[in-house]
Image (cartoon, rainbow, N blue to C red; front, top):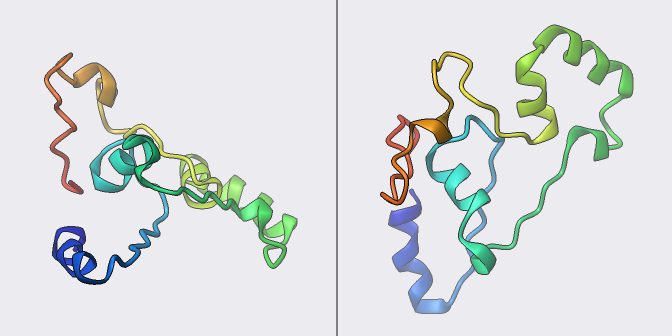
Length: 104
């Protein structure tokens, strides 16, 4: 989608907003959130900052979701729990390899 929208921004110098819940430490959104220096303006809003979400609800979710809670409610990119090696250890140093996961 991003690559399809970029040419449309050239005509009117428009803005592009990328909104997502973090998934794993791989893929398009992770690369652009963690890298690209000042190219992007980043806004992080956790569930704790939303007054409409009750603390009791969040505590229930924290107990029920275990590892996914931080990802879904606290805007944290998590390691893939199914991996033998973490993402950073599997990259080739200096290769520019950004990962080739399903979400690239």
